[in-house]
Amino acid sequence: MAKVILICGKICSGKTHYSKKLVNDYNAVILSCDEIEYEIFHHELGEKHDEVAKDIQRYLHKKASEIVLAGSNVILDWGFWSREEREQVSEYYKKQNIFYEWHYIDISIDKWYQNINSRNEAVLAGNTTDYFVDDGLIEKLNSLFEIPKKEEVDVWHVNQRK
Image (cartoon, rainbow, N blue to C red; front, top):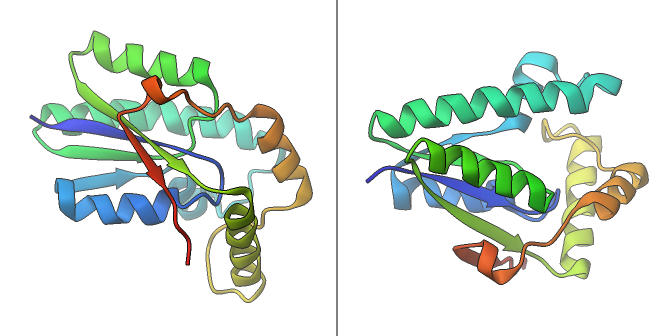
């Protein structure tokens, strides 16, 4: 039975890397807000970022439902920062009788900062289309991100960055 795999985690926790590993295991397609934000808007949304991101997420949830109902697995690669959002998303798929799994990417604070620094170096060198993670974004994340409880998730993946 096809399903939606929802990837929860902080910015730079390794969600996209983890999602890419799951593609072959689940014969799945990845739907990513970051990818659309870059491909269409070139990460130049400015103050409209949060508003546009919500629209993109709503659209991708509809597409995920269509893809699963057509028989293929879908991986939603974005953070799902709040418990409320995770509950709303779970309810959305339950109402449609679509099977879903929550995967949480756990990362130590030291490894998280290593990932942020690696990403920022790659951005500055022009080696990635990712956006730069500045202190303001880190502060925003730390004030908004709610680590899920163990019973909220189906797979608790610990990122063992090397």
